[in-house]
Length: 199
Image 1 (tube, helix red, strand yellow):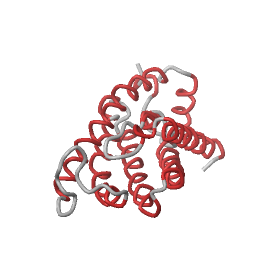
Image 2: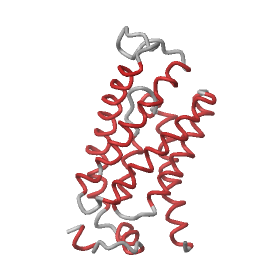
Image 3: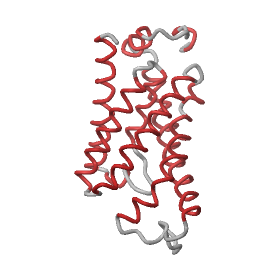
Image 4: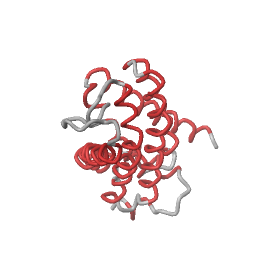
């Protein structure tokens, strides 16, 4: 891996982590919890331009989630988010890169990955934080894992879809003609012809 690609990965990781931490600090309710609109997830559209975004976004997510452990006081339960939340970001970015020639489909990758993975560990984190019922209901979390997973799937999916389609897709179109996007795309050795894919 050459130094330019390492720089791309580091830059993407820094931007994702930094944006996530700013949102956590100033709009904490939007960035974390059973219902969230993590604005920084819009940056996963960078995977439509370069494969370097896959490790970059994943590393940025790891950094942000580790920092969130200290900021939110979730303790070791936060490690679930570090591992599985970062896995969701990696898989979502991989999907986006694979379908980069169809942007509207590509941005569905992070939506699906987060909607399927995050609800799997969300009940444990909520219980650890003192939640005893499924949010906005009187249903006891104890023994209600399938219902909590369904709630998480819908809530996480809606939040992620809102971010990806209302912020991410317009961001992609705004970036598509910039010199930075052209530079990132031209540095990848993928089979896609940039001009054809972005015309």
